[in-house]
Length: 266
Image (cartoon, rainbow, N blue to C red; front, side):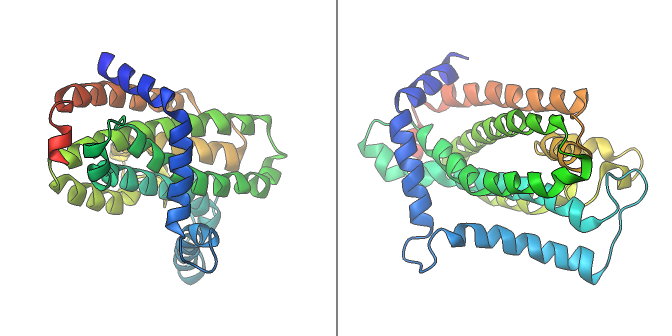
């Protein structure tokens, strides 16, 4: 893990620059618009409203037995916010090295700065939306003390996004086809996650496929905390740890193998 350790050390030494870059990235997203940062939140809120309208209002769907709640809308919102955060962070992070190619060719900057910046700026937009849900759902279970676990849960999730975004950014720099494949996977991945329906509603014997989605443990954990006020089970925490561990191993090898060619790829 020496290659990844060096990247982390370089990232830590450049942490002040990272913060500046994240702030500039957020400002660039709404530059030239009259409503400023409001647009950063308008898109995810409109997406959530569209899903809510279709599933809860138009079709009036209700979840079956074994679901944490019968109301599709209440269930959908909790899963959709972290999923949108994940999609935005990974999608932007994947393109970050390609977009910064000219800058990296002229300046000896740690490549990890760019995918990390993309993930942090996405987290700044979406994590507050999730925090707002705490008082909305906390009353369902008398604001259970287990809600405090939301912070470490989200911290591990953001770490996982950073590792995955950096790995995909390297792969995308080496082969541009990766961007097309990942964009498609992010589009259909919501249907292979517990965002729209709980695992109990998937065909018998196939629910295990959901665990190949890195967002499944995060979404299940958030649902346990906000809907039931219960601490996520051991399986959720185990998956939360296994995903960043596996990604760290893969990323370490990618960094080691791409160190000499990365700038040329860009």
